[in-house]
Each structure stands twice: as C-alpha cells, then as structure tokens.
Length: 192
Image (cartoon, rainbow, N blue to C red; front, side, top):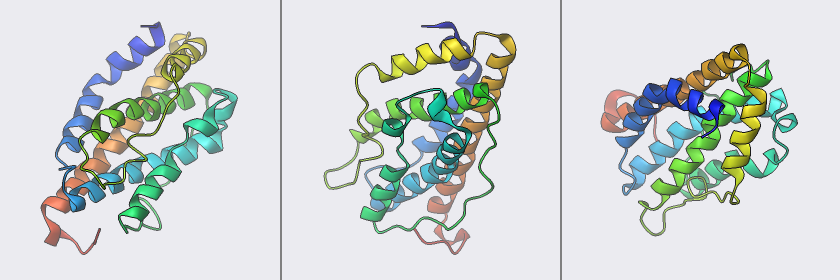
C-alpha cells in the first residue's frame, strides 16, 4: 500500500464506516428501497463528479472519461422510472487545488470497488450499470500511484484528506436522509 493511500484510508476510516452503516440500511432486493439507494447515491455522487469535471480532473488522471459513472446512475434510475430532483441539497463542492481533486476522486473511485460487491446482491432484472461499472484491471492501482505523486507533501495530503472527508460526509448525509424517507414514507411528500 502506498503512502497516500494508507494516509487517506486511515484518516477517513470512521467516515467510511458511517457511510457503510447508512447505506447498509437499504434493502437492495426491494425495488423501492433500491431506488432510494440509487437516489441517495446520485444526490452525493453527481455533484462531486460535476465538481471534479469543472476542476479539470482530467489533468490529473488521463482516463477520466472512462471513469465517469454519472450517466450510469441516471440510466439505472431511468430503468426504474425514477426521476432525479432538479436540484440537489446544495451547490457542488469547489475543488480549487489538485490535492482537493485527488481526495474527492479517491472517494468516488473507491466507491466503485464496493459497488461491485453490492451488485452481486441485486436480484435478476434490477439495473446494475452504476454498481457494476466495469473498470479495467489496474485502474485502481494506477489511481493510487498517481495520488502518491500529487500528495507527497503534508499540506497536500491534509487537503486531500479534508476533501475526502467532505465527500464521505455528503454520502453519509444523503444516505441517512433517503433511508429515513424510505423508513417513514409519510414523513414527507416525496415520491420515488
């Protein structure tokens, strides 16, 4: 394990655990719960992906176009006949340094690894393009190696950790909110 990966993983482990706990409450074998799971992911994922794009993430990782998954989550939601809200909870994050870009990218690409595991739990006929997004062999390692070249100074590593923490926080908030909505369907007027 390279130094940047170890530092990011160790520093964000509690946040990662909270995200896993929030999303672990969704029943991926139930259509309504799975739709809420995807909406919760979309609410956090899409603004982060858009912010990465706006910040010029392709300067840092040349295969960014192949890594993008926003279109896949939209495809899965469309398959379920679920509309995304016109706007999400707040503005997308501002990523003004390479270190911040690296921290957010670490979280999005790491979520791809967990998605592969979750895709195996889906019943036949459920859309799985987002969770089961193909990643060429070696892409995770390539990203980690690139992060090591960006995050070798303590200040850059600290900025990446802050950005990664912010990404995990966004997923946790969204997951908890959508889980509450599905657990208490009369709590608000949203329909999924």
